[in-house]
Length: 250
Image (cartoon, rainbow, N blue to C red; front, side):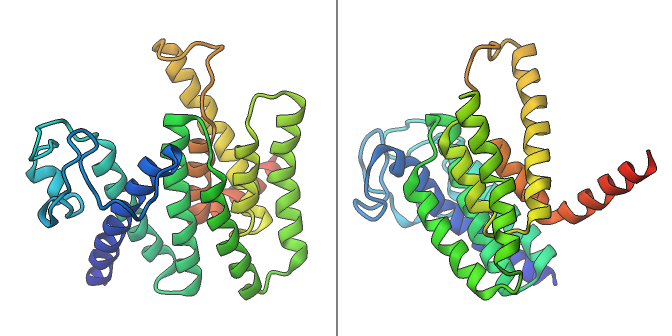
């Protein structure tokens, strides 16, 4: 079994390397295909040994071998996060169609989280890929239209209402929840919403306590939705059952 976990991590790290390309180029309206990978500072094309996920960053000590400019830590962070995420998905779903589509969603969540954190935008181009994948998954799933519509109502509908009434969130957040609802049932949509608001509140309080952010500063909500969705994918039903038991005990 450890062989499968090792393979999952390596595959995830490789995919994470591609996600780094998406994270850097999509918000800058650059092609993700051309030109080949290069240093953003000196423009030199990267060699094969400089493109090995995780290992290259460590061996190069986080610097470009041509100009010596520092490579953002985001690159190795995305590769590690994606690799570990694939390991957890392997643990949860094994080798299955469901696991494959959940991996697609997780890749979307990772890329959108880093883009939203830096640029405060959730690109429609990336959402469209997740939407198409979600439609394909729904056509293969037996949950039915009712489950999907209820998930959309709870997820997309609630955040859309918040956007229209308060303006404290962006339409990208609502669209992201709509895409997530294509991959999970309505119970996990509820778990995602609950966790995202809790995590968002805790992180926001910490940022304000350390004066990194002020109470009037905008804090991207996309990363909180993504974390909430990933935790829900892995442990959502346990969280829902625990909360239901807690409510019945009152």
